[in-house]
Structure formats: structure tokens, C-alpha cells
Length: 116
Image 1: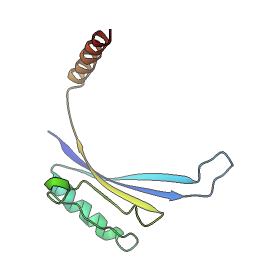
Image 2: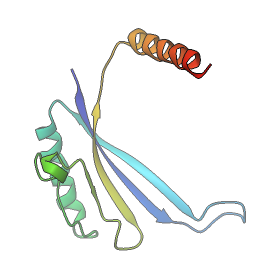
Image 3: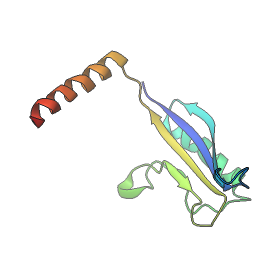
């Protein structure tokens, strides 16, 4: 059973503490984990509404409003300078770790034989 993870990432400039430090920071906040994409979309759009007083979003989350009718899982305000905000819904995929490890090793072995 897969679930949906809703996160918000803020990117902004900071005053560096030394000449070797970056003048850029990024902070990601987990909003929640949801059973369905519809629940994540609903909560994601609530978050966008809360942030809309400070950020300008051109779109919202939706099940069929993305490219070729696919769900919109990323909404950002990346065209208005800094700070930037990225709101994202990521599908969490659960799988048996042993099966995934076996597939990785099997494919690596096939690849090495193919290279020779």
C-alpha cells in the first residue's frame, strides 16, 4: 500500500558566517503523510492558501490538471525571486527490502556481463 507525502521547501539567502559559507539555505518541512492522493491534494491546497499572502502561485494541486492530464504534484513560486517555495506531493512506495536488493544485485551482475 502506497501513501502520499506532502512537503514544503523554502529556499532563501542568508548572510554567510564566513567567506567559506554559502549565502543560500534551504529548509524542508513535512506537512503530513496521507492515505490517498485526494487527501494530500486537499491539504496541499490548504497550505497554498495559507502561504498565498506572501507567495504568488500560478497553479494548485489537482488530480488531472498536469501535463497530459496527469496529477499536479509540484507547485512552486520560483519565478518571483527569493525567497522561493516548493510544495510537493511525493508517492511513498513500500516494497520488500530484500526483493529490491536482489533486483539491484541481479541487474548489476547482468550489466557487468553485458559490458565484457
